[in-house]
Image (cartoon, rainbow, N blue to C red):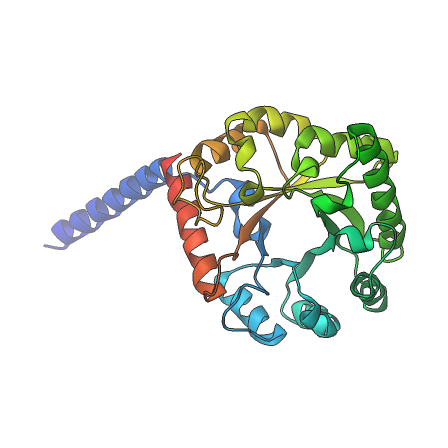
Length: 292
């Protein structure tokens, strides 16, 4: 009887090893590009209908598994920027980037909001990436060469301020002329600066869907973050990952390219709980990765 029990136990152990080996073979490790420690939570402040405090926001990010956040804001949020930085640090969350929006009012100087951001980074001893988005009214009416000269001058001034906190500057892909990869590269080269980057946004780049591989190759030497979104031609630009027709193909292209920067997961919808939006986007991304 003891021999039979031992034989059964041995057989069960061998079967367990075989099943484990098979599972290891059919369940690949997640691509490092999409591991949670490389994902950046983005657009999670102005669009959150829960109006979370910095403390509540950090707790939410911990619950979801994020260790990186990019800071977007409206003027009413900026008085809490110092607190936000301190609480992120307490919760082990990196401030990966800070959004800086430039329109015609700030084309030749800094607004009080911009000064507050730069001064706070210095006061808190924090270096990060400054994502510079730009309204088309900054360069409207200029020809291409004039646009390059004007925009590169603005980037130069922002770069000088960013250096005070040890921060770096990236062009944030929005719409219009400066949302075209070729124009971004022209501006970067015109500055003569060698530490600029590009933060590319799916949700502002529907005009790049059918040439994404080409656009990616153009941006690659400067590309440091890609913010994902559901992509549909002539559709709503705010779609969950996995709800569009083209993001799967674009993500595959991104993987094949050898890109190794950050991946942004956005919480940008309108009047929703950003916790739920981030969850849906993470779920949609995982579904796509499982299919790839």
